[in-house]
Picture 1 (cartoon, rainbow, N blue to C red):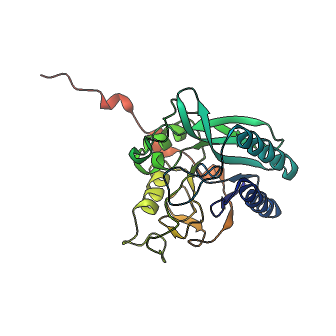
Picture 2: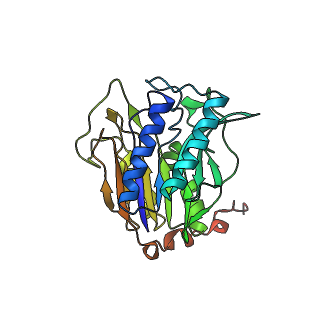
Length: 267
């Protein structure tokens, strides 16, 4: 399978965001990608960050959804799109899986919310596996993949060859400019990517915004725990890579034996 990881700059408006999505989607299609993944809550943007969000009322939500479904259908490419959606319980950070015919396959909500996001979002309460062209995959969103490795193992235990990881890690206004992927002095995020792959024997595809001060690159990690490819820090673009699902054996995830972790009865 050929996958694409799209790393757009922060959307300045809904029209700007949709234009960036269409442009990056088109690039992915020219390189024969079958599925493209966009970052966490790309529309309207993740709350609490150092940039202005896109206006996000009901009309904007409906326009964004209908437009992206139409783009997926027109380009014939399955799409994982990061949205904010509203429920009676509150706002959710979600990823919508849209098939190449424009139909919605389903949603994955962020079930582990970063403490700094508690004032903006509520957590989801379920997980699911998706499938495109015979390849099973899971989705974990930002904080989940960094701090809750069991979210990735959950998918691997159910046969996911790849876990997509839409994220927002870094800043627009100030910060450190990274120059070397996985360097010892970098934030830990890229090391975490390696671990999520190697501890499960699967592909791990992490997708960040093209931020001016990124703390993690958009990257694809292969099932051996090696970085297969990444995008340059801060540059808008699409990482298109071929994966071999047969290499994603889920071997180490399959050896997990939860019954061995039961509380021992005191002697």
